[in-house]
Image 1: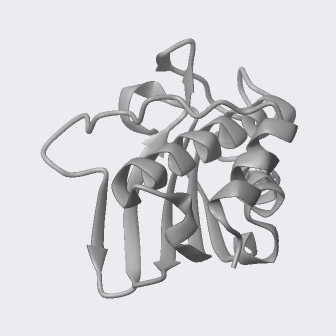
Image 2: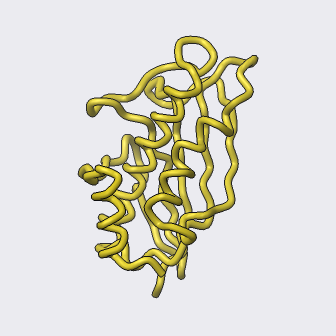
Length: 156
């Protein structure tokens, strides 16, 4: 188990300051707990507080998409912190699902979502290794380039 101090140190080492969690954009909650699992709603990519708009394979390349996915990872961690009160309660990251706004020809969605997956490992260590899906989609709300949701197991 990674302790909150270890996680805080890792965030500091990575130069990450958690932002205030994003509010839901419609009729849902950003996080809900059922038993030992926390389900985080899809978080869209944001840049300078606004949706990070773009389509991979058209006006964004894989590196930019990976940066967007990493930014979402930071937002997901901020939501976990807010919902749980302490990242100490995270036992492990179980599953990540990523949606990539992309052209029909673009096939590197898995590399885009690595931006989030690699961050989760950097922050949570072995507890951040997770199962994952990555999909290409025609559109994401607000024109965002990437959306990611997460499931975490917690200490109860």
